[in-house]
Image (tube, rainbow, N blue to C red):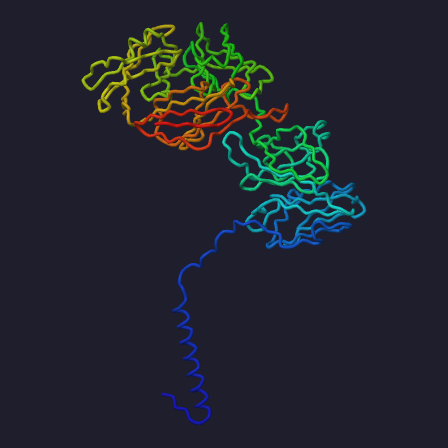
Length: 564
């Protein structure tokens, strides 16, 4: 053991004591520290916000060298000029727009500013640096080298007229009517613009008295111009809006829709056998012509037998003679539901597919959806003779006996089987398909086809009798299941008896079918056409299993009476 004495020994003892204290503190701190990986903070989803601007907005007698917006976070400098819209554009050189940290700078040439109101609009192209979040809504800043600021404004809302949902994040812009007449709206810079909020509301401020064309669009590239083919648009019912001195228009309504300018196209042509083929189109069509060899097929709104689907976008054609190994299909005059027509004829070269389909075997291509739960729809690979289907398509029970009262009807290659409503829901049933006589020959399946059928129970459905009282003609009734809002059911009759509705909550709408095409037609930008009028009745209808309801509505003055 070492022995110390005197001053040196006392010094070493104090150093040793201090070292022990420090080691103890270090151990205590290490024991209190939380072990594991450090946690990352929550992702920033909030856009940058303006916390100051210099000079102040609505300043008059001002020709600034620059307007500086200060934000609460750093900005993304890349392509920030796309997010800044200046109206009217000063003469000569365009203002310089750039980012300096948390500041956005708009630099002017003072000599090029005239004595009128200038408005700087900041749009979604202004984003933060870290996450690329856009500013939450458009911001407008105004100044004037003259003695006053223009105070006219226009405010309103953009909605989808069919669903009544707000159209959020649309750019609503005011255009010069003369420029629209000369150049159209595509890629035209507006005079003034604003963006809709989450409820679809907008306000365009600092307008001069005058006439304007009001137009809205989804600005996908943040350019303040309508230049994307897929951008949805919103139209004003009036062609030109006139705003007087000091006037502030409110409650203006624009209707949003997808501006469909794409003509129908042929996606695929395939042979079913040597005397039938299937043509798949890119969208539903209402008119046109298909020529295959000596056969010509006219497409009309009533030619439902040509189509294999309710959307009228797939045709199955049956030919008068067998095709060769290679042949052509010519399509002309195809017109979609909004009037887009094929600019020129389309010719498709088809080669015969050598597959099992051509072994003269009868096949079910697919089952078809039907509105009646007691019906089963089948699509075959060839045209079926009606009498043959009635004899060779039948239903058997668990004892293999045929079920009486089964109805069979035929339309081209489609066969629909309807079950009687008096059967026991617990009884197992099978749909049987035997040899069928086709339009060309007797085809037998490779084996007898059997399908299990689940018989519906009466208490699984509710019934609804609906009547629309109106002196107006050409009305469509739309019934929408809230559980499946994307597939509303349209009816041409204003008196409906719907015995097989699935339980749920439904909404009723009425469409004024001005063009008589049996569906709601959206608007069109050029030539300008507004969408067809849609009225949505307030409230909902609750359909319950095993219950019956009667509903009487009046159009256009809504008054509902409901009974059980």
